[in-house]
Length: 412
Image 1: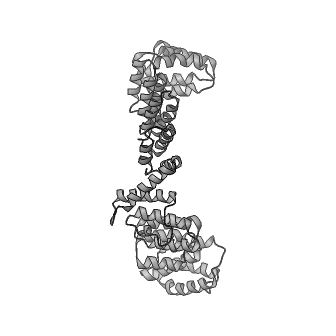
Image 2 (image 1 turned 90 degrees about the vertical axis):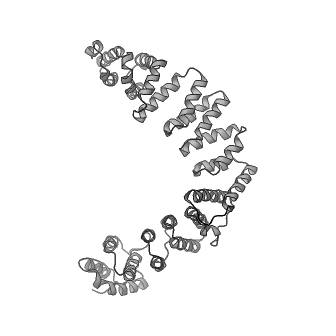
Image 3 (image 1 turned 120 degrees about the vertical axis):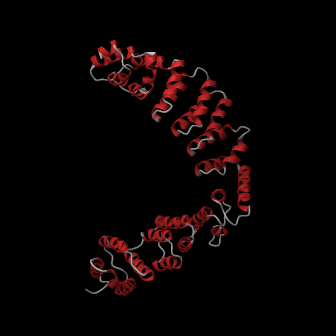
């Protein structure tokens, strides 16, 4: 390191920063001395790419931070060098970009300059920088500058940043409040919409409710993806506000858009009893939209209330579809292995062939089961197996049959 003090090398900066925190005092001293020789304008780009090592040294415990880091930071934050550092890290890893941005903020000489940097960061695609800038905006003393930072945050592509900016902007209770409530009451993010509804007073909530009703009242026989998304959000707002028919005959269960129907099914399901929930799941599985079918499978997984396998089979046979079948099988994942086997055997009989992979998987499930089937289920399984066993072939037929024998479904 003494040689590096006499003949500085840009590539050595990172190693020297690491050794400046060495556990041997003499090594630390030599590294610090060599670092001083590397504070050169022609090495600025190398320093930019070693900002993470500078930050690590700042957080280290062995060095005297003021003595070691003060000259480095003074060198780096000089305006002409800082501009070069920002330029050098523009295409660098995101961690270096964040450190360069933090240096810019720390070096801001007045509140207006700092606010400008915070506005840019708050609207940036980097969520960490955006959230940091939004929080830092609270320290600004000028309310106009604060409001500008939070307005920038509300334009973020990240819901967490939009929400953070919106919370602060609404707390200011300024002239833009009404426009903010109207704009974000139908945001794509549930968290952002929840923030609006929590902040709104009764009059404002009535206005939001009227806006949602206008969206849903617009005639629509076919829904594009964007229209369906907009209507689904409006329906969610009405559900939160309590303005929703949650009965089994709700017209929204037959709305044109699949997103809208999925929202309606979920709302009706939350308020239904066990019988009503089963009927909703069956209706959703019979729906032609994969999104609604997937919702039905998740609803069964949430509460374990599985419709009878015969009802599920009727749906699949009546309207064959790979996605519907996948959703039904996911729902049956919460049922007993005996219902699953009865379903697969009956489906194979209707479709002209049993899914061998499903039978092999069933054998694994049966080995984990300790409960024999009910008498009625055992009789159905025995009859179905008698019809299907000769079409399956060995060794799979023997594997399934041996498990049926073990549980007394068929005789040996």
